[in-house]
Length: 228
Image (tube, rainbow, N blue to C red; front, side, top):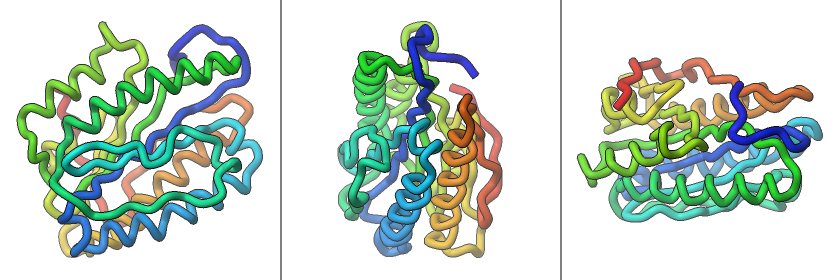
């Protein structure tokens, strides 16, 4: 596991849950499924002192624009998780631009508190194709350019309903999964949320945290990564 910066103290794994809240997520039950799963994620992580100490969680949503719904934080300090609301289209570029900004800010903040910060992990969840295609790819490349952005994240991408396997494979860098035909998107999303919760728990559950890439959640299939 590579560190983003030189060691300075206690080790921390930053995780960003990035959720599509475009209008198409509402009729498939996607907004409800994620909103129902977030309190469970909160309860499970906050209840484990070691996991809670070793990880920090942020929640970002995107539609026409991207929004930081919950800044990177220790979940045991959170009273209740925020909820998503369906709105707008599916602008990928805006979320990759916002991710780069918050990663820079968050790593600087953690380091100023004396933490050793491991490479961030992003769980990217969507139900459709980008409405800003192909412009989003420039924002994505800026986020993932190892030569110019040392703090680039590991990304696990999940797609359901109208998402395209090739696009999901482009977004994911260490894992990409697409919902199976015949499985209700809401059911796939519920399993995706359980899977990413388990990944966070497994990654953060030791004195030396190591990012654990989830296996394919029930109701999804792994797809080939398509490096850009």
